[in-house]
Amino acid sequence: MELSVNWSRVVIERFPELALCIGVVRGVKNQRASPKIEELKRQVITEARREHTVEKLKDNPVVRAYRDLYWKLDIDPTKTRPSGEALLRRVLHGKPLPAISTVVDAYNLASLKTIIPLSGFDLKLLKLPLHLRFSRENEEFLGIGMQKPIKLKSNMLVLADETQILCIYPHRDADATKITADTKEVMIVGYGAPGISEQQLQSAVETAISFIKMTSGGEAEAIKVFKP
Image (cartoon, rainbow, N blue to C red; front, side, top):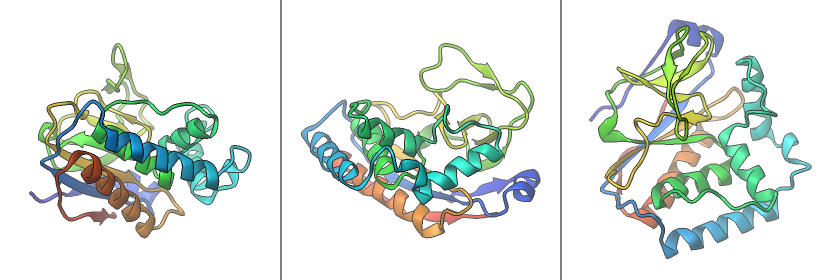
């Protein structure tokens, strides 16, 4: 399977330096919980609390890069947090992480560790290729945890496949393509921002895939960075 990303002309004009990193893991066994994921949580959370404080988080260069992108997208990052920052901020406040499943928890831990926003999708539910574009006025989106679809404005940056929006870039994933107990093939997406290097993106996705293999098994395919 050849992964590819089509970039809309408008996105390229506004954000020519954006990049995505994508990796695939096949043959995972996604469980509700396991001793391996609990041990990994303890390790990553302990490390995060040792390296970061809530007071200094806003000055972290990765946090600043995504907050700057949010402002350019007309999103207030103090109200809608980039997912990596949101997870890190949660544990720094002493709150537990959401426990979803071994695969989802694994890539969430990678996002917490690297502060890079990551998504995980059930590869079998996607209609490739992918598209990075702006939403159309009143285009509907049903995110994970939403009771009913919302209508999007026309200026929202989204990742989509051939038939539907997969993610509001880079913080809210679609319900229809989420990872479940039946998922065997996972696609991990790392979302870039101006000021975030290709190596940082690739490292985040590599970390996610390493954590997934550690806790849920599977075999990784080539990880690739995509640019306009």
